[in-house]
Length: 97
Image (cartoon, rainbow, N blue to C red; front, top):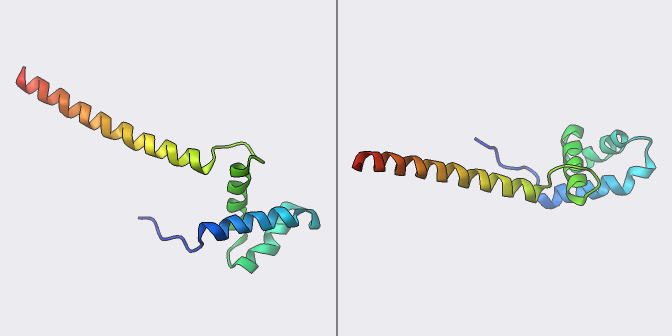
């Protein structure tokens, strides 16, 4: 069971922008993340994951964007449902044949 998100998508988006804005002021990306994470109220590893997702969504990094990921999940659910319906139809046609 998934636990509810503690941080809203707006906070995550803002955190990603903050890291990008202050990136030049620190020697490394991790230093920026360690500086900003306590201000937001999360651990650095969580913020690092948000920054990665933000970079992918904005095109700064290669990967599957959040929108594409949601579409893939929806398509996978649809395929699963269609396969289940197809199996039911096969069993029904075998029964009536």
